[in-house]
Length: 352
Ligand SMILES: [Zn+2]
Image (cartoon, rainbow, N blue to C red):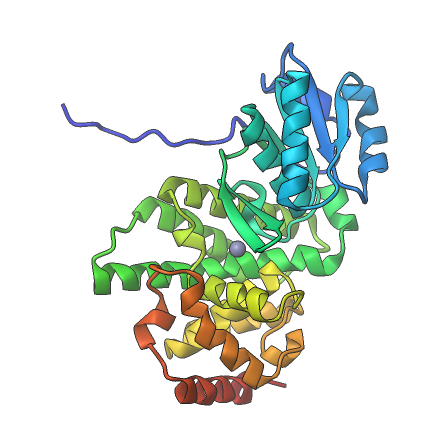
């Protein structure tokens, strides 16, 4: 008898709403995530006190740990604390750095992790990877997916607007990543996962045409759901393929050559727009760029403080940041002079 379905890993609980942090204790008990054991809570340095006072009434027994930053060292130190305390579950409350450090610490301690996102800057909320800084740079570490995902819209409304908008760039870049995957399938016979593609693409399509923005709860809900779906598409694919193509190679190259430039989601958005320009897919390029502009996200190199020459260097380096991943950049194999011309054409077409 053939297997009639495949089992998909999924979080036990997913909620996007206001007031999630304040009701954390009840939410965790309801979902049977933490029933009798000890709960640890990890918070970042910025909002730690505020979060601690909010959870005190419903999660007073929990031990609260401060995560200094998004480094491997901070995650390892938290992991050691978690192991010592024999906790049943750890709840990471905060932005990307706190959540990623907590994810990695939980995997080191061998306990499940609950992610409570307070901003929406990238699709790492639910992904099976933790992006952490170490002496040599920034690395991506494989970890289990969070057991439960909560997004607190009260916090998201108060987060820096540029960080929340950045998540739009990360979601929209899925479209380009999927086109790269399909290219790899056609040109190289790379296996493709239709279900992972449909989740990643649906997430982007739900967002790209919306005319409201981050001031609206309805928009933020779709953005949060899209980021979570993107993370789950990576779990299903078993790799970042459905959400990371030439677009993310470009952002990794910016991180390497010009560290501190812009942020993950903004760079993913520019990368996707430039990849569509390289594919001569004017309809998609225009659609992606309209979306980025509508949300005041950067479109051309000058918007993130880079010259066209610097961006051409980035594009030249990009394929080497992800060896083995076939994208439009590997497909075109452009020489430096051609890259220079194409960047110039892009800036003339879309610069203001
Ligand atoms: Zn990303």
